[in-house]
Image (cartoon, rainbow, N blue to C red; front, side):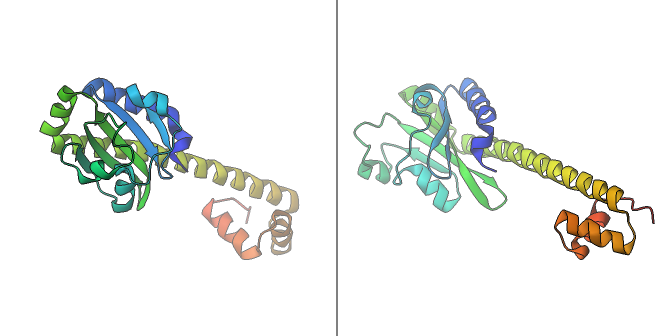
Length: 199
């Protein structure tokens, strides 16, 4: 599962954060592609982000990051320094288990936004992290749903084959052969799915 699978949901989360905080919000995938955004970022969806960006730093460290452009060393050496309009950023990784799937970031483009972000940087960092967790949770739910659907289909196929061939030892060998799985695997799945074999 990837963040790209839930871009509509992510865009609505970004929109809500943007409305509440009055800042621009973006999500960048693990392969450094902007997959959603509000305000200035909206026209930059699908653009590739620089390897030297703060997003890359968040990907490698797995930790939230706060940037004040005036004092940030990496901003001074960044190749986009001249065209960059961001004055401050707070970014947090979007994780599922130990895997980092992408980054959620908020950015200030005006002095007022910058002051708001930097005056509450710790609280906002925690808020952004909790919003990242919300995105992860949604993806995890979808993944579990997908697994459930696959398992349901598998259970139905096993039940159909047992109905067709029967459930004694010899017939179960035929069932396993028809399903192209080993007999031990078949018995494991019958137990896992609690399939009634009539015995």
